[in-house]
Image (cartoon, rainbow, N blue to C red; front, side):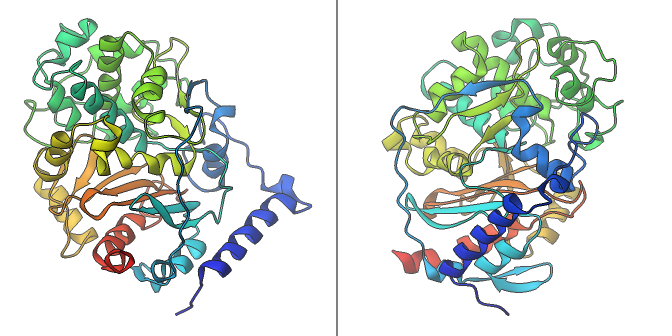
Length: 415
């Protein structure tokens, strides 16, 4: 078992970064990104993740003039915490550097950076967030609920008139937010199969390769069928998130990038502008299109850890989100999660978060290994970017590592 202290970790990180840019054969490292291979995983997807604005049309999410400060207080005890992973066990600092599918990790505790590493990207680089964006969209709706602009028991048809005569019409905002709309457009049907509903939705949004599907986003949403009655079961359907984005635009009469700026980016004190992918009609990829620095993704956690200070989301809603809101998993999903988190399986999903534990820990994942873990009671936020080898299990194990950090007791020793 190897020990890597923070000072050595920093040196290793800088060395890796320098090699990536100073190698005389650096052009060989460049991989051609196309609309058909950008989400395949590996080196091509890594290139896309770090340069997504070069391949997509985007709108700007504006940071405040005076960003909020994050004090850097590295903690050796956390860096040396031994974590379990598929190849055995190592100190956290070693795991992050040697795991090939991790690009960066930041850990905040009580508002301070206690661990940070960028083994496969620079700290000032933005990275494609994929479905971690869903947590941001869910937070926007929570903020609009707090402002009295959205009511959870009202229906999609009341807010988005274009969907009033569709299967979405009578689904409540809460059911959409909890991924329980019952709409038949499962992500699991296949992101890379051009015949699936989810592929065609992303084609309509200008994300995937153009296969000749001519429907607009609204037309595509309008044509979606129903799998089951709303409210019955958590089912991962990215269309839910894009409908939440339309609800936000309807009640504010603003584009989604401006809403993210007003409700999220400026209140949390982001250090840099972010971007969000949009299509030629101006529809935002609310379910996966945010491109941001890692520290700013981590700042999202402050909305749930310090709701009174930021005033964006109500403390009562945060308590409901982390303690009781949501819908149950299917038996099959419960069984998979029990294998993934032995003896520590999450119990439900809510507010666009994939997993919520009984102790209030919340996790949102993104395609190919992005993630955000927020633990309000422990004042803990863990955010990471990565690039898996492909859509299978060949990706980092930061979700499990995050739970190990949360339950380790190391944070209590820091206080």
